[in-house]
Length: 83
Image (cartoon, rainbow, N blue to C red; front, side, top):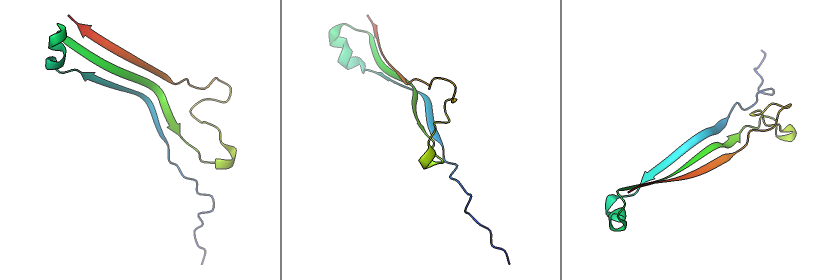
């Protein structure tokens, strides 16, 4: 009888966040005393993280090609105010 082997099995786990956007509108009772009708703050992040490591001793980020520059992480913040 031949038993199945798991010797060549590699974890196929991959988790990445390409972009995320978080926005929050301040309550009207907070901005009313400042004579502001609406105020919102936000954060946008691109290429936040990438977890992928099937070969721990020979790590190469598969998210970017070997012949190209890696994807840059961008984080932007915004403030929208209406009077």
